[in-house]
Image (tube, rainbow, N blue to C red):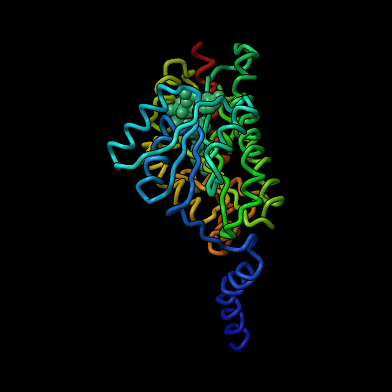
Length: 322
Ligand SMILES: NC(=O)C1=CN([C@@H]2O[C@H](COP(=O)(O)OP(=O)(O)OC[C@H]3O[C@@H](n4cnc5c(N)ncnc54)[C@H](OP(=O)(O)O)[C@@H]3O)[C@@H](O)[C@H]2O)C=CC1
Ligand SMILES: CCCCCCCCCCCCCCCC(=O)[C@@H](N)CO
């Protein structure tokens, strides 16, 4: 009887002990990154998710700068934000593939507190059919362009006199957590951002710079409308495993993830499952999230295998019909 009581007590204590251990070891330590009266610099800020983020940050009292290639689209975005919030944002026309141009923009914009590297291009097609120039285009804009942006902003972020924590956020995609049919180049570019982000966080933690990686599902944006005109049917079906979101909702999740310094920022419920399934060795500041990861990882892996089973069945059927 005494043994049974002891066993029961241990059973109850295990989660409490686990929580206590995780509380002690979760790294990096929790942080808050305020944006009010601070400078938020958003690439790809003239459209879609970037524009929604710019508007939200502006309405929360940040000083906002947006960067994109087309000055025309930047002007329209500036006007839209002015109309919606009464606030003026600064615009910078530059291509992220051009390091010198990006450096000039960053210098002109002034010290950055929150850098959101959000620009991205997506042209889905089977690799066998896709021109190598299109592959390079996606890698250049999404991955190399992100390196350029960070290289340009990092020196002044590190040497800031204001000692408050600052942030570098990268816009990935759920296709940066799992490879999806039609997305060889796009997924590669977004998986690349993860390696960049994990390594960078270790390099800049001593400077109180905090890295966030945002993983949206399909999101209603001008870019998505374009993409849909040529998306392979199988890409559509597989991507539909995660519900589509509105740009404003993604922006809301992204900004709250950034402000709480979360390394991984999922945007919907499927995204939360994906983030647990692919947590790997990514940093985790929240001991509560760490607890759920440890508890759920086995079951979520099982669920992931069911998803793959379903996707491969769809692919087989599609081939049988074509
Ligand atoms: N919409 C979706 O379904 C999803 C999108 N994402 C990611 O979110 C991010 C934003 O996507 P979304 O809002 O849909 O995109 P949009 O196509 O609507 O907007 C893209 C923005 O990036 C800018 N941009 C594109 N190329 C460059 C470049 N070479 N240099 C500088 N700026 C550039 C565009 O302006 P301009 O053309 O003038 O340069 C525009 O401001 C991307 O990284 C995308 O991969 C992730 C998951 C889902
Ligand atoms: C463990 C259980 C997991 C359950 C859910 C799995 C769902 C995976 C769906 C992936 C969808 C990828 C959409 C990419 C959108 C995108 O980036 C393009 N629109 C280009 O912008």
